[in-house]
Image (cartoon, rainbow, N blue to C red):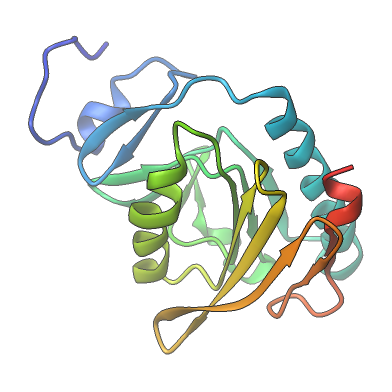
Length: 184
């Protein structure tokens, strides 16, 4: 088990010493603790999951839709637990030893007071660097969501929708997230 002593830079080796289920992510070589999500966070996550899972079941039945906590290893200093990830059937080789090693096709992060900075800045930059094709950021307090797509290695904000709007995936044609139902 990892001791409580503070190190300046943590690595995958340190992260692997944590107990299973420990509420940490490795972000830029720093162990970042995430408290349990709120009920509203989990209800919103469930709605996104149901919509994505139904779409994947119909359009990519061998693809994988995964809820947090699941480790997504991007490099020695960045092992994240996104709220929701989709790995296409073409990229199933990313599943290695009960974790994802590499960039999922789609990631959805739901902001909370404890993680907003990381999701909006640091994690977003790393997802961009490693090639997550579509990144959706959901703000439950403002009841809106943004859809970013990778274009020549850079995220471009393609859609922003409020409580009564919808997000239409560009990666997965026909996948629509109706925010009026998600935020109901």
